[in-house]
Length: 82
Image (cartoon, rainbow, N blue to C red):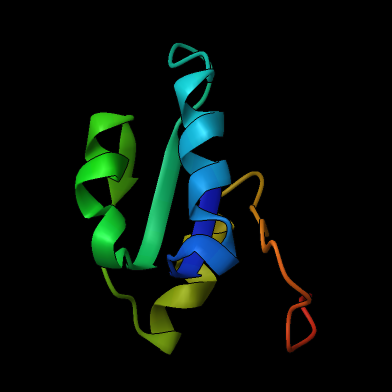
């Protein structure tokens, strides 16, 4: 499972942390790519792998190695997602 972007409340950071707490670690892993901002320690504490910032050129490989992506925004997002 993967989430990309800049992590903050509006982008669903709290939802991601809550989800991770209940996730079966034997079956699933969560990877985060982007700016974790104030959530860096919470990601690690909840078993989410924080890969840090990524470059546009990395995106293809990140998505190829992922089975499911999270879009957890708690506000109307300002752009299309494909």
